[in-house]
Length: 64
Image 1 (cartoon, rainbow, N blue to C red):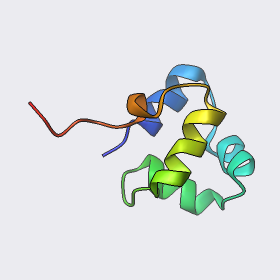
Image 2: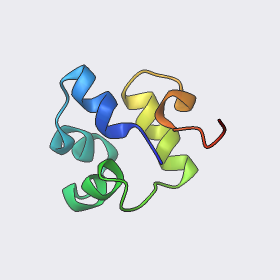
Image 3: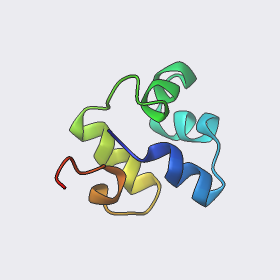
Image 4: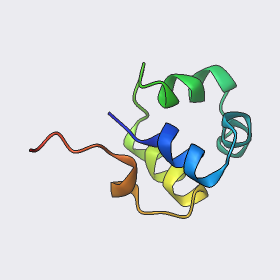
C-alpha cells in the first residue's frame, strides 16, 4: 500500500500534474493513487523526488 493519495491531498497537488511530471498516463497514476496497482520502486523514487520527500513517507508499513 502507498500514501500517494494522502500526500497529494496534503500538498494540494492534482493527479494530472503528477502524471505529467512522471511522463505517465492519468490512468496509470490514478491506479497508484487508488492502490489498485503499485508503482515499481524506481517510479516510487521518482514520485518521492517530484514531491520533494523521502520515499519511506510514501509507503504504508505492514509492520504493527
